[in-house]
Length: 91
Length: 109
Image 1: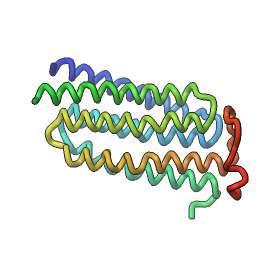
Image 2: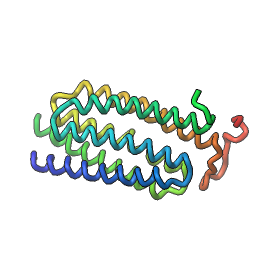
Image 3: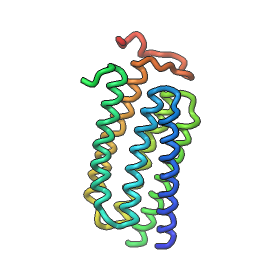
């Protein structure tokens, strides 16, 4: 059971890293600016998932702390960028 | 009890990874900004939350922080999706497969 769990966690880590590469390509070559913003938002979410998988692998809860900080920061960043795209100014 | 927690963690891990793969596949394949946004909302709302459930049930040391992060994601992810969809509508991105637009005469650009 431990062996199966270890293999599954590593496989999930490889899959998430390749999905981050897909999102980087999407944010680089998007159709319009909203597509690029969606790619950036999904990229930060997948980085969050990679941090959680590192917390499972290392059995260390400091990665969950970093993930909390990253989640708050990425939410505020995406909302601010969406507002900036519409109004062409931040405040 | 230990085996039950490990089985729950394994199922949550596989389901979360599957939701992430399907969300990114929808982001690549769907035709429109709004439908793509609908698909990528599932990555944060189901994929990361299920991975956090797996982390809580597999490692005994991070239950409180994991629950705090689950509530934070479930609070922030729909707000971010709504903000991006509102920005797309207000900046004039056209729908490709929508049949009617009921928001058009209710909003001032």
